Structure formats: structure tokens, C-alpha cells
Length: 288
Length: 313
Image (cartoon, rainbow over the protein chains, first blue to last red):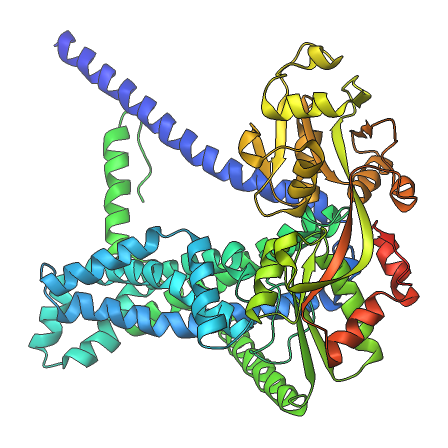
């Protein structure tokens, strides 16, 4: 009997240790985020103001604001998402719903997506420069930058969407079929809403990668800090602006901190909105 | 979730896991409909974006007839060129000047390919670049920098060459403390590197760097962060940071103090011209821009970027 109690205590102890380690890992991860955020706030909050958001940069970015750069960044992001999301999600739907998981076609597509996901962003930049800027004659423009980013986002968006769709229980599909729903109807009304949170999470990963991109955009959307007039104008992205201010412009540290703070804030806003939207969709379609 | 009892850690973890699994299966999600305010905000965001799109399209059509000039090249020169371009645009409505960066080599490449009308090259042209024309708009010096805590005041050319080729690896050989030297070098294609190699009469393959950097401010930050580092950057940038109290010291070269003033007088041995480069004789808008960039109207801009203006005549 004592033997059993002993084993029992040991197991409890072991569980506690494991639990502690898990919490420590969680704490570590949140600490990294809080540290970065605190550092950005400390360095940038003094420089941040309404004028900073609403003015265009002057004196190579040392004074003035980031209005034109924000607009360029959002336009680049929008171009990339509008191009990549439909293609990526359609591909994911095809891979999950219409092609057997172990067919040679599905395997080939998946393999090429994995390879694409591992390509460094600078390679995408050089490809974008050669293909969109020069071969297609788009020049240094927001369009070239957005399309290059779209190529980068394709593997992330497709893989996450595929995983999300596969996680939807198979019973949903059979039940829908038994109720006489067409495949499209089941997809639109049931499977996509059910997978919406995962699709949104993938979208957020993509947005994060797109907003953080520097190397690929230097060669495609360019370095011009003027307010863009159209998608065919060159426009500097926020991440590139931060890089240039901190690495190339002496005395650019303060605006660089403030710009980084804006970038993180933007990311947080987009994340919150997208998650809310995804869960809302799921509830409206499925939970009621 | 139920309240966890003492000694129920396993089942507690298990239950957590089950909740997680059911979350992914979308059965047990808490019921909170999307508040109206979010839907409202989302809709607004959407229309705002569409509005911006339409607005910019309309603007683009009204400006369709405008003239455009593309400049690419040296990252040292790009901020200055951007400022000059802004002033030029304000004097010539309807003209757009796009400044791109990427290094002097890219400037030369893009001008040859016709992607850019003007290249930004922060060094003198080489003999094999005789097909291009260079117009100097400013001068810049390159200074050797060390951390301010480093007791070394000056180094001879031979000592610098020995440090960069790895024959001197410790500071005490060069009059400093007993510490290992961290050699900071510039990346291939940077004209500061070419100027530096030319001064030391070395090849880049002979240099044994520990850190390879790109732009000037990055070099200064590397040296600030490492008390035993040695690097070389644009004098204007280094002088600016040193004056703001950053712990860097500019070493004098060949007995000449490293300062913007000595670059202006032409006595500092490591200095370089900042050039606008064109393929053949510049025409039209490119010609106008080059003339403007070489005129006295932009000397204040050149000084605020810590370079030395030159007189075109």
C-alpha cells in the first residue's frame, strides 16, 4: 500500500514539474513580446504624435511623419492579399475537397508549396524585380511589390488553409451530403465557416510576414517616400523605412522607433479585427 | 472548466487537452456573437480602402501626362538625392523623381540597362566604366572608427592593412589594451569598401573580416556595441554621431584629422566624390536635374546630410 502511495506522490511531483516547465515556456514567450513592446514604447512614444501619422517624411525621414509610407504600406498589403488570398484558398479547397490526399497531383502541388515556403525573401525580391519590374514593365511600383509579396504569401496561406479544412470533421461532409446539400453549398455554409478561425490565423501569419518584409520590397516597390498617386507609383513600405532610418540615416533612431511602434500597433489592430471577424462568421453560420 | 482539485494534475491537463481538441473541432466554442461596433468598423475600413483606391486612380489619370525620372544606386547618396528630388519637384510641378537604392554597383548596372536615367555612384568611375558620364555633386570622406573607450588615437596605413588582413589580431600590438580586434568590413559592391581597398592597396579576398555590414549607420552601431571593433564609415555620419555623444572615435589618417573640414580642403587622404552617372550625354529632364543638383541651390541640403558641397565651375 505504501509502495502505491509512493508511486502516486512521485507521479504527482513529475506532473507538477512538467506543468511548471510548460508555464515557464509560456512566460518566456510572453516576456519576449512584452520586452520588445516595452523597448519600442520607451524609445518611440515621445516621438509619436498625430502630426507624425499625418505628415510626409522630410529630411530623409529625420523629421516629418510617415503618412505617405503608411498609405504605401497598406496599398502594398492590400494588393498582395487581394491577389494571394483567392488563389491560395481556392488551391487549398481543391487539395482538400476535390483531390484525394495521396494522389500524385496533390503531392506535387504540396511539395512545390513547401519548397516555395522555404525560399528566402531576397530571392523573391530578385525574382519580382526581374519578372514584374523589368519583364512585365511595371517598374518600381506598389503593384510590383504587392505581386511579389503575393508570391511569398501563397505557400503560407495555402498550407494553413489546407490544414484548417482538413481539421473539419469528416462527419460534417457526410452529414451535409445526407441532407442533400451540394458540395458547393456544404463548402460555403458549413466547411468554410467551420474552418474560418484557422483561415484567419493563416491570414494573420501572412499579413505579419507581408508587413515585416524588407528585402523583397527594396527591389520591387522601391524607396520613394512620396505619397503614392496610383498603384504604378513607387512607394516605400514601413519596414523598409524603419530599416533605412536605423541603418542608413544618421540620427534616424527616434523616428525609427516611433515607426516601429506604429507597425506593431497596426499589426495588433489587424490581428484583433480579423480574429473577431472569423469567430463572428463561425458563430453566425454554425452555432445558431 | 471545473475547479481543479489538489492531486488532480493529470486529469486537469487532460481536460485542458480535450478542451483544446474540441476547440479545433468547433463544438465547444464559447458563444459570443460579433459586436455590432466591429462590423461597423470593418465596413468603414473596407469603404475607406476602396475610397483611397478610387481617389488615387483619379489622381493618377489627371497626372498621366507628368514627366518621370528614375534614379538608382548608392545608399549613401540616396537620402541626399531624395531631398534634392523633393526640392526639384516643388520647383517643377508635374515632374516626378523616383529615387531607388541598392548600392553603387546597382546604379551603374541600372543605368547601363536603361532601367534608370541617372545612377547614384559614391566613388570615382573606374577605367572600365568609361562608357558612362559622371557629374560630381558632393564630396565625402571615409574615416576609420573605433570605440571611444579604445586608447588608440592613430594608426598607420601599414597597421590598418595588417589589422584587416589578419596579421595583427590583438590591440596591444597597435598600442591598445590586450584584447582581440573585431574587424568590421563592408559588403561587396559598397563603394566605401572599394575606396578603402584602393587606399590600402588590398584585394577584398585578402581581408579577414569578423563582421560584414551594409550601410554607414549600421557600421557605427556595430562599433558602438563592441569596444574592440574597428570599422570604416562615411566621415559625415561618424562626425554627427560622435558630436551627439555616441562612443565612437574617428582615427586620424597619415597625420590628418578625420573631419568634414579636412575633406573640404582636400587634404584628407580617404575621400571620394559622390556622383550622378548617366549613359552618354544627359538630355532633357535628366540634364535639368543634374544641373540643379550641382547648383548652389542645394548646398544647404548637402550640408544637412553631412557631405561637402563642391563647386560645379
